[in-house]
Amino acid sequence: MVEWTDNERGIITTLFANMDYNDIGPKALCRCLICYPWTQRYFGSFGNLYNAEAIKTNPNVAAHGVRVLHGLDRAVKNMDDIKGTYAELSVLHSEKLHVDPDNFRLLADCLTVTLAGKMGTAFTPEIQCAWQKFMAVCVAALGKQYH
Ligand code: ZNH
Image (cartoon, rainbow, N blue to C red; front, side):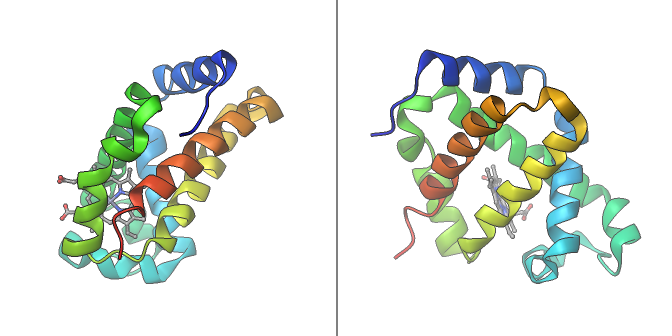
């Protein structure tokens, strides 16, 4: 089981409480689709992803970026059982969506860059540590049901 210090719990809760989902979510998913274009293949039903501009203005991409953050939100509320919290979502990504689990880390990295860009110097090394630990646990949990 993953252990969290009170300090880490506080950092993660505060980060999410102050996060603008409608800004961070879409920007992070856009970055992922632009920087790692092979991730576009899972979003065939989202319409035009023809170039960076199309990706940035695609309303389905924006909505899905927000949905991913709401997904992470569930892990924040269940920090002591992220694995259990994501069991079903992991099965969905594996068996139904067939998303290569390597992509979870790529999206997590894009979230880190987006958040750091927005927070600037407020994204201290201490905050980055807690954030990256949290994302690593979420990424591992999402990949848990892959066989
Ligand atoms: Zn995912 C879906 C989350 C990553 C792809 N997702 C989804 C959902 C959620 C999520 C919550 C919804 C579900 C239901 O409906 O039930 N994701 C998530 C998270 C993450 C992710 C949290 C991390 C962090 N995904 C991802 C990636 C990819 C994906 C990386 C690729 C690349 N997803 C996806 C898809 C879908 C989803 C495709 C479906 C969509 C639609 O159809 O709408």
